[in-house]
Image 1 (tube, rainbow, N blue to C red):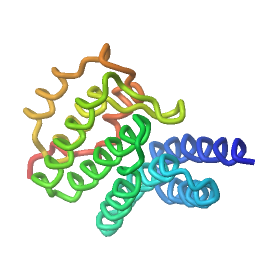
Image 2: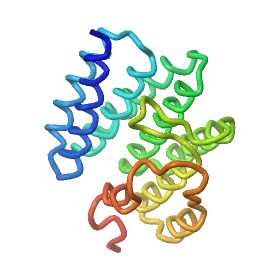
Image 3: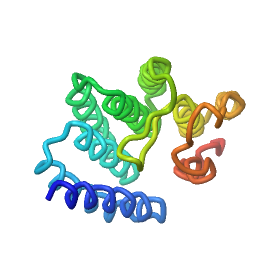
Length: 194
């Protein structure tokens, strides 16, 4: 039964990412609700963290009214997984810091986003290499830099985005997705001037 629940979590994770990236955040939230129900039956802190990660990204793509919920969900999931002694759990914690940083940037809270990025960078430095979480999600230094790019774009700071792009070193570990898809998450017009 646990194998079926894990498979359901990852199917919902991938489906949620797909529909969110296609512009349907409400369907992404539905997928994360199914993930939450399945992970509740598993009781595995790492899977709960993956669900928190997906839900945080889904909420941050809904509307500005959901950013508070995105930060709350991601922060709560990070606090729950942190005491779990494994590199997979530490990677999930780092991934949650990145998701919350992005939500904060979308809401315009640059200093708070920077704090979360710094925490994620500390976590990545503690890991010898990028670590996979359930064979579907990876965390490492390249992920931190990709999120630095996305947060800089959201905050309207193209110079910082370019600096972060120069620091991406794919050889440090697997990238979560092709960078063009990760950057496509940035809202259209983030660099527009008033």
